Length: 510
Image 1 (cartoon, rainbow, N blue to C red):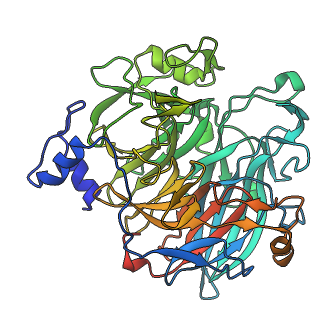
Image 2: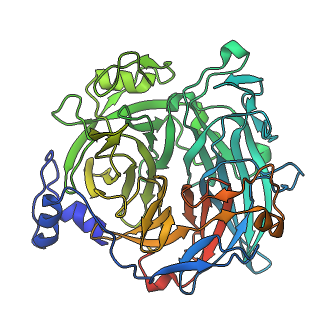
């Protein structure tokens, strides 16, 4: 049992709402209960980071601790196996397969592309297609450019990249299934039926074999700004996050078919939204470390309901929330600021959930605006149905709007920042942050990508896809470990690069 599990099972009184109970090892928990949020990271167990040259291009794209190395792959514009260019905006990613081939471990990953309508890139020409119409969005006319690509890494080398689903938009995060598929999530509520297209905002299942992928949405999982999804292996239920500022719900999907195979989820199921026991319409927008809430679930009658007006503060009249959120809120469900990553920990039997802008921050020069903070991390214990806030940032240096989250096979927690860059002792740049069992962060890696025409030419990259400039403030996404914990795979969304990082993991907590 790790520190996080101890905190949840011994540090909190199950069945209470908003109360922290000091355990026998009470000093840590009392301090956390009294703390609103963290102000600074601690020293990394892996040591300080410094620029490290990419083994593929020779460019110093990342800052990493001593002993770590990496290989870049699948830059936007790089030719895939079918000759078409790699799509833009690399985001969520997961490992869907691991096997031995000629004495070497072969890893299959599926990677999201968070693109909307792009005239140049256009449709991802994948076996599974959803919306193939010509669309108009924010002054752009083109095809839905989001979707997924499937990558293979064998031994210590990148091997291949293939398209796997296309005709979707804003594929942000998602989640893996125990049967080796990827659930890709559209973070969008757009409806292009007037253009001859289709409504969006769905979850799609992508097979490890791209040829099997149908491109059909799982509508019973709801139409909303989906972010991520994670499955409880004990029950077969799936938990989904919604990224829609101050109108973000936490959902549970109970499938009618729990067979562990591709396509079973498409048979449908029931959707529910979380509610705090004994409290109507709870707001968890500005938590403190140590907050704990017992939850129950309210049923969503129509998961495919289109967006609905929602004027509950702090929004102005005319705002539109997702249909599932409005139905759940009318039944007293709780709300977060902006839910992003969710990951199930096999070792702790807990879900880790990120609210990327929890807390109070600044909006258009106005300070102390709720739901504009630096972010928080919650755990959810499905056995006790308890939510617990285990970390919150009150300073961008401590954590700068974390987004995706992963847990290593060793139980270490890693956060991907998406706050637009932070200046710390290692310079400017977004970071990968480790999260300790004591609820403190440390810097594991920094985005160090600066590109000019000479560097692009040296790396043989297509300037029509890769823009020269300083990309250090761009977000990390899609962090995921291989099943052995030997390789960390992760993306920088823009300019669009995937990395495989290896090194002495046993020196620290990851």
